[in-house]
Length: 130
Image (cartoon, rainbow, N blue to C red; front, side, top):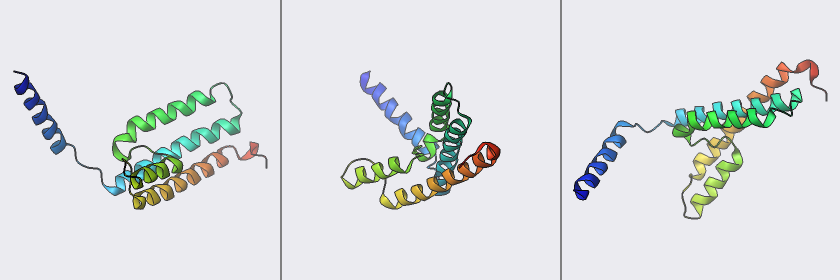
């Protein structure tokens, strides 16, 4: 009976792999761009508004939503340091990402962060003192 159950579980896993398509590279890069932009926009708005009470909570919520929504597509790195750590991990023989993918993720994440920076700087233009 136990053998039948494990065979059924294995068969269900094989079926699930067939049904779940692998995300395209464009979808992965778009997910990293969107997730990084949303997270950086949240951080920037909290810093410029001076909201110390809810700042960490809103950043944590933005990160959690990004991970749940986009983690299955791109892995939800949202940070070049995380991408680099995954590349180093793969180079050392562990799980991780290839360095080609790490480079593309890093570029996309930096572009997403710059777009977010422009967005929150335009939003807080009158209050933005340099």
